[in-house]
Image 1 (cartoon, helix red, strand yellow):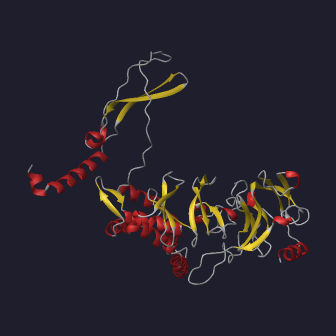
Image 2 (cartoon, one colour):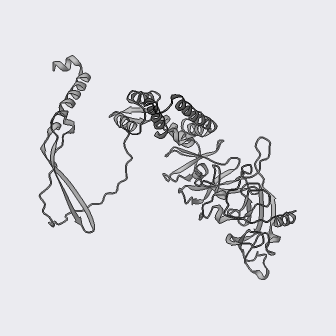
Image 3 (cartoon, one colour):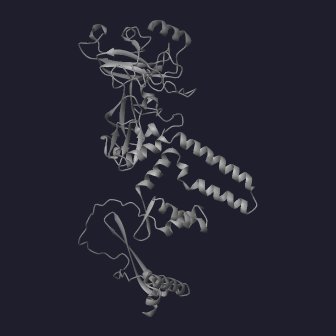
Amino acid sequence: MSSVIELGADNWRLYDFITRYFIATIMPDCKYLQTKVFFEIGPEKFSCTGHVIVDPGFTSVMTWKAMDDETLPEFKKDQTFSLEEAKLAERQTNPPDYLTESELITLMEKHGIGTDASISVHINNICERNYVNVIAGRKLKPTPLGIVLVHGYQKIDQELVLSTMRSAVEKQLNLIAHGKADFQDVLHHALNIFRLKFKYFVENINGMDELFEVTFSSLAASGKPLSRCGKCRRFMKFIQAKPSRLHCSNCDDTFTLPQNGNIKLYKELKCPLDDYELVLWTTGVKGKCYPLCPYCYNNPPFKDMKKGFGCNECTHPTCQHGLSQTGVSECVECENGILVLDQTSAPKWRMACNMCNVVINFFDNAHKVSVSEDICEDCGSHIVNVDFSKGKTPLEGDETEHSGCVFCDPVFKPLVEKHHARMKRRGGASRTAGRGGRGRGGRSRGRGRGKPKDKMSQLAAYFV
């Protein structure tokens, strides 16, 4: 008792812990006899484990590690018992608990981050900067600031939050210490990497601004539920304030959307790649529109796609909204565009270039329009299947169904009309539809490969 008074309660607990830990290191192991029983109930297999302490060993001193006896009845092999009661409990998986300081130190050592001297400084820094709070059990709970910061780094450059980059620098420093690398070479290499990453981060800082804005401003409570998140299946909020975006408050994800148009839900259809609900971007009746997946728009799923691509430029081989199922022909004006069937334009059907502002109107009052895999032998466009409404069909003999090339078929040619999409004005200047300023170079396209030069002149003359 006098020792407690002399040292103080906290100091005594620390002294007691250190002393017990030291004594335990020179004591024998804890020994126990473990029994594991396997049994079957119908087709289902189960197991049960119990143990009896033989020698408590070091746990008699480190009492917080002591084990209690968990005895099982004596069983014999192939013994049969009658089942008295069976219950089925419905539960949900729980997320892992927050890391403790010691667990974080173990992970940092495992991944080669920091040294014995710098690890404690790192943990102190993230606490002082309000990235985490220390809660009961010395656990580190991330703050909203820390969560948003990490999500922002992940959105712009994932390497900034992964252990790989810091670990690589530590390995290079160890090479210098062992005389296997030149200090100046390593310094120059590291500075060049961080300079390039800083430059890229500054160029894409808007992504970080959007996350901070929806989390720490009044915008966090604004917006209206629009489409479901592919991760948590909860509704994401559509924030109309420019730049317009979708925000999932549950996952704390923000997705940029195309600007200067209207956004609405697209028939509650989902992207086959990530399960996010599609939305429709449109500039009006005489403008352009196309569906897009919010996740794919910000995280291109294929190497030949860039950020800011909608379904009308997606190269997914089987998706009903993608280019492979809706592309009809190469554009009659621009170099890299493809004319894509607008599946939302019924009953006044049209197709629009996915690069420039060309729009082709055709097939008024058609009940259904689809793109076939067959190719026109003259111009290389895909054959289109049209089902006209009864009583409003332009076909002879009141026929309602016809298939042919939009540009070459004598039945379809009189029904085709070209114009340019009207776009919303911004800053007094007219803007063209789509993303016509972004060429795709020689990227392979799944639709409309053919368009010979002589056919081009014929089409140009036809539309004049």
